[in-house]
Amino acid sequence: MTDISEDDIRKRAYAVWEAAGCPEGSHEEHWLTALQQLRSEAAAGIPQKTTRASKLSVVKNDPVNAPAPKKRTRTV
Image (cartoon, rainbow, N blue to C red):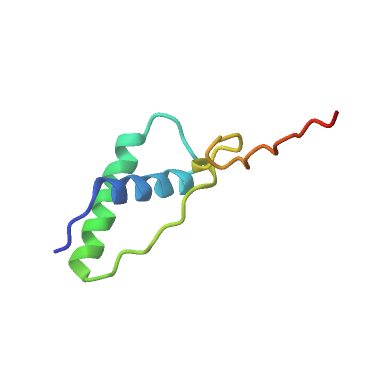
């Protein structure tokens, strides 16, 4: 049996939550559903799918992703 990381569970729980229509207040249910799904897949020998990052994981105004400002030169 393969190890299931917390990050794997978190990603699957997020996908379960999105598929359920993003309801409020049922995070434990989604977490347990994700854990059960991953355990079942691991027991059946189904390889883990690589999940893409959510669109929400990249902040539009994140300074890390922002281009460097252009240097201005003064002309006298």
